[in-house]
Image (cartoon, rainbow, N blue to C red; front, side):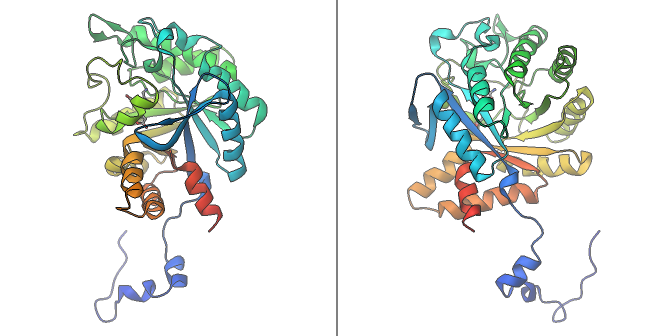
Length: 333
Ligand code: PBG
């Protein structure tokens, strides 16, 4: 619905922008700490915090320090943390068995967080790439990424994550049929309350580069992910994927990357009205942070503006590496 609008001079849009009070009164959307999911990188060791060259300010943390980070996040009011493991190259195989090791790094981190900070929601990543010697999200045979064989592996992975206490599973692999396969397996195993936030509309994007460094997958990756991740030129296909995943049992859906895909977020929210999230991915973070560190833009303002825009686009929340920084900023007013 388009409001009836008088014309100039009866209509002066600057009237409602004149003071801070009027601007606040007429503001349509707002960003709060409740909108944040914080992606965190886990590595092995004790008391380790390791910088990631291509993501200034982001760390790989050992499990003990991930627990501390979760405590800090909870104290700031951040509702959820999302874990990504940096797996030692010696544990990567073509069969990806480490993915469903109940004691792998990610599962140890889930247990440690749930024991120390039970109230923060723990989200996982369900995809084989951290464990795969060829860097792909699925099993590979003769250079082909296998769909149905991968589903079995993803289901095993999902079940050990649920056993470890994960609140939200985040399948980021883009195989067809994974949500239904995981939902059936979760129900059968008695994990009826474990939520699935599906990376439903995940594009084959150049903006994931720094993340692949962060989890040590860049060197391993052979080829690209275009046979399973979406073509950035497509929009209707995103709606079909979201509908499919909702039918298969997803509770929440995601669009990824974020800022270049806000049109998709808006379409998804308008079409389905379901809990909709966007992932402001590593490359988006590093572009803002890199420019800010050089004094080319105001980092805090660019961070706040970028996150507010996700709300305007209809998102219920954002996965962002800025989560603790923006939470502090919002807390300080
Ligand atoms: C892979 C995965 C990726 C990201 C999250 N899960 C990268 C990829 O698909 O290659 C990217 C996140 C980011 O760039 O911040 N399962």
